[in-house]
Amino acid sequence: MVQGELLYEGKAKKVYATDDAGLVLMTYKDDATAFDGRKKGTINNKGIVNNRVSCLLFKLLESKGIETHLVEQTDDRKVVVKKLDMIPVEVVVRNRVAGSLSQRLGLEEGIPLSSPVIEFYYKNDDLHDPMINESHAMVMGWASEAELLDIKTKALKINEVLQDFFDGIGIILVDYKLEFGVFAGRVLLGDEISPDTCRLWDKESLEKLDKDRFRRDLGKEEEAYQEVVRRIEKALL
Ligand code: ADP
Ligand code: UDP
Image (cartoon, rainbow, N blue to C red; front, side, top):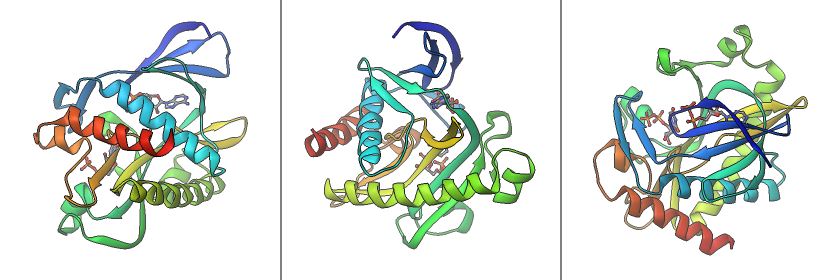
């Protein structure tokens, strides 16, 4: 696989063309940002952990029949994926109250939700990723009604698989963000699932093992990320 031109540099990853028009190469960085990029820093080896965690979780999802963009991890920071036509909607799945839901509704963090809550946000840094509903997504032409139904069905299936898996390694999957894109007419799961994009709490101590350690200046970010990859590898390798 030949690494071609840089197509896009985001906050956490770079996306390169390859010699196959249907594939791109993503490289994971250690840069950490929060609060719309107002807080910037580095978490040592974050890129390596996030690439590993994401590849292992995507493989797990594939094994349960959920199509993803994953092709092959080629290096500790690199992964070859199918080039998706990204749907500019961030799909947040919540199993417990935390973060923006806690703030918006004035509810204490940690309250379990009786069934998963799915939220949609328009992926646009300049507008600070505003929350949207399905009508907005359809009318703006970001996703069709059929694609939204597909996304919701897939998000709930993903949630079943991941909640069960994390529970088995002593972690509560509090909430997380998914991104989907279209490849050859099919909606596939893209981007990443990692401690950057999930809230992961130790089941016993409720210690945070995710990016909230960085957002909230809790320290020991690197150790928390390493603990997540250690438990996932122990369960899956
Ligand atoms: P951001 O754009 O939010 O700063 P990243 O730094 O993670 O995020 O950049 C990765 C970019 O690649 C994101 O914009 C994401 O939507 C996009 N992306 C993820 N998976 C794919 C894929 N399979 N094909 C094309 N683009 C993708
Ligand atoms: N999330 C993400 N990227 C975003 C926004 C949210 O990965 O641009 C994840 C976040 O890590 C958390 C979940 O989505 O696991 C819900 O985030 P929330 O709406 O609570 O926003 P936050 O308070 O984290 O900004």
